[in-house]
Length: 103
Image 1 (cartoon, helix red, strand yellow):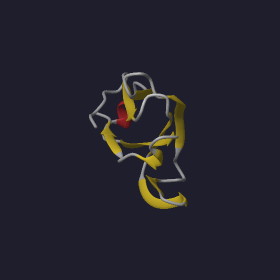
Image 2 (cartoon, rainbow, N blue to C red):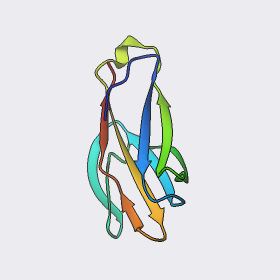
Image 3 (cartoon, rainbow, N blue to C red):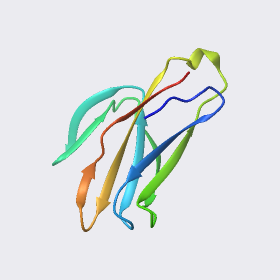
Image 4 (cartoon, rainbow, N blue to C red):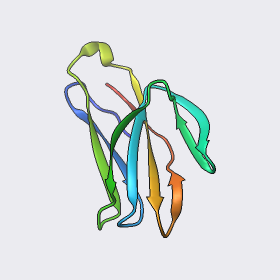
């Protein structure tokens, strides 16, 4: 969670077991769908973007940045983020939604 100022960035972190594969997603709205059995995707599919994917580091985090343009018209915009974890030991699951606001 947390807010971000125009001209800066949001940081999205997914916490999981080291070595798992994490995918960070963002959208401009929330929704609820189950695209694959037992995975609850809570982001608007029409505005969904892939922020990045890769292995979770030894500290148990995978991070991606989302740059916020220096444009005052973006103040008040909500950006919803969610992680998807693909791990051998913990299985496949989605994280809780992380809502951030441009201030």
